[in-house]
Image: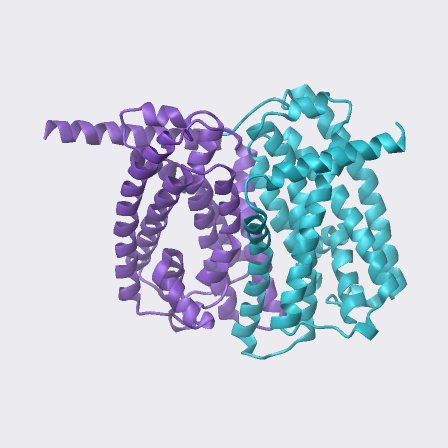
Length: 282
Length: 274
């Protein structure tokens, strides 16, 4: 397929995604609903920290957790959102079968839908960081920021987000109503396994291996190190900046290859099981 | 007298039937039951580890575990009751409830009972994680007092769920987004992961309007004693939750009737995909 045709299809899916996401409310209300959750989680962390250390306390580790929590909004919005897109299309709007039957194909459609979610995730990340900067004293020295590695890590992290979204969307094709629990569980599972708000060193050894197999663990550590100047994990602190970035790139590429294969396998299985037009809520 | 008995029997059967669907539906997917029991507790684990990472005293971990266990009930109230009429509308079943001779509150009670069964499994898993994985300790406590606090908390929460359900009768996708928006902000305002006192005046205010705030604080006081850093005396919190229960049940009854009429007039009961 010509690249221009593919781009046109992605753009159409993105436009449709925006209509679906935003058509229920006026822009202000939509904005409030969109940012309420990530800002609340950021404030929960700040209040927990304050409850332990007292008002006005500062800690570099807390800043690292806060920054990673801000970037986790991409996972909540894009990764889980792509799974919800499939679920909604099948269970609520009952249009999934038409998407699968159209020449666009599921992967192209999901890529387009993810663009709107990326935009929403970016707003969440920006506002959470802004709240931290203004109200919670989570700041960094601009001159000390490692700009090039930071941008590279950001790009790799966003790519990892997209491919993980494919996996969850694929799993939603196969799962019935339990997809709701699995999607919410995936949000929380990744929050736990990737050491967003604590060093992965605190996890049991088995879970640490799983954590290191996930790109987000590397991504959050890279974002902390390249933005704030210090990571959270003692295990990953043994790696140089280049090694950390190489680790993130490797895990992301492997994850991307596996995820494309996984989503095709899930789609095939969903067709076999007759799940594409099955509604299962009760 | 006979008419009242007939009405009670009818509503009881309606509640039992609605609970049956939910319980059977849950048991039909065993893998869903496992994920349903385990996944919601993972967020609690992350917050406990956050306390460890910042060197908090052990009692804070217990605070987070108790709050984390209660999150499962709040999520059930929101999605399993508040937004349920929205789901029913999407599936085209809502009009059947309104055509049936039973009370809408009986159907909501059935939803609550059916949902509570799965939620109890989920909270038992949360408690097991707290005790066996994080080794949280509780003070010696009276099981009767714990039962009283737990059931008053549940009654107040599910009565609130009924009120929310009536509000969501009118709405379409706003219901979905409102439920989403009411999760973490309510965790924050209810102090589920930290002592509610830390919020200062805001904490006292939310205790006055949200039963979850009082419920979590009361449960912590029973289980942790002074380490709970309680907001109000336990008796006051129990009395306030009883008052919340009555208030929300009355509100639910009034608003169900009012909003049902409004939804009928505006033709929204059968409106899908809005």
